[in-house]
Image (cartoon, rainbow, N blue to C red; front, side, top):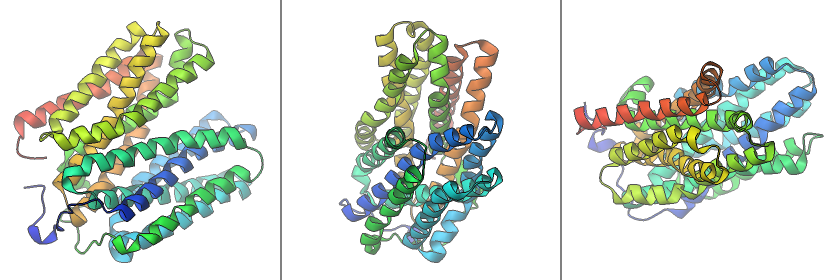
Amino acid sequence: MSAVPPPHSCPVPREDIHWKALIAAVASISAVGLAMGLGLPLLSIILEKRGISSTMIGLNTAMAGVAAMAAAPLTTACAKRLSVVTTMILAIIAAAVSALGFYFAEAFWMWFPLRIVFHGAVTMLFILSEFWINTAAPPHRRGFVLGIYAATLSLGFAGGPLIFSLLGSDGIAPFAVGAAVILLAAIPILWARAENPVIETRPNHSFMRYIFLVPTATAAVFVFGAVESGGLALFPIYANRTGFSESQGAILLSMIGLGNVIFQVPMGMLADRTGNRRALLSIVAVIGLVGSLALPWLIGNWLLAGGILLLWGGCVAGLYTIGLAHLGERLHGADLAAANAAFVFCYALGTLVGPQTIGVAIDVAGSHGFAWALAFFFGLYVLLALGRMLFAPKQA
């Protein structure tokens, strides 16, 4: 069955960039990035200060992935029933209230429902901002627009820890700032409400079908989630075990984030210029695979390791940006909204699988198990992408 829905459900493609919609979607994803970048270290530090065990902190943090996977299938139905803008505003309110709620929740058990509400609301913002940006982008500039969008997300993730370093974990200030940042995203969304993308029909398939409908895109974001979350979480351990100081390891880690930011827009522009985004995704994954395999031999040289990690971070970014552009090219309307939900679901699944897989690899194979596990994820994607090009050349 073709991935493209019937003509009556496809909106007329836009020839120019609708800047109000772009600004609204960028504001929403900036709030997502900043809130998560601030919240993850802040909440972990506070729980540790309260004497909560690392195991329980990890279990509480894992609620983020559980909430994301639970919220993703519900998002399209909510947006169809209430409208995209209304759903986003309600999600913003829920995220802001729950973010502030962590400060007032003294009992540890209360942090579990708060995590579910917060990350469920953030997931809805994530999905609907992706859907909005894909509908706002003209086909010939979709990659460029999505590159701006993805770079903003990466900057948000980087900005969250910076705010945390300035405010610390004491008092209500970091919680109030986090809630305020989320609420501010409502202003451009309301300003652009006339550009609200309408979901007029029901999706043509069940939610799980969309995970496999455009597998080159959904597998790309799964690998993105796995290698980004696992890499960022466990690279400091890898750097320490291979002889780097804590500060040197932090600088090397920042190279991954820098690669994520600076490669997003060029990757998007390259996606606009190529007629075969699956081939481009395969090339990006091959570069990521080679870089991962080379890391054990180059990690001893600080400059070479930094260069490899910069390129590796760019490859990770490319999987997200090009995969999202590929999704927007193949689907429209309600199908695109549902597919965006499946896209974020696969990302959340990757964030659950990645750290565990890389952690086990380090325990089993030693410190360089970090690199072998990254290579494993990239290698799986290369096999999938090449298989799709060879055996399903006309499908997604």
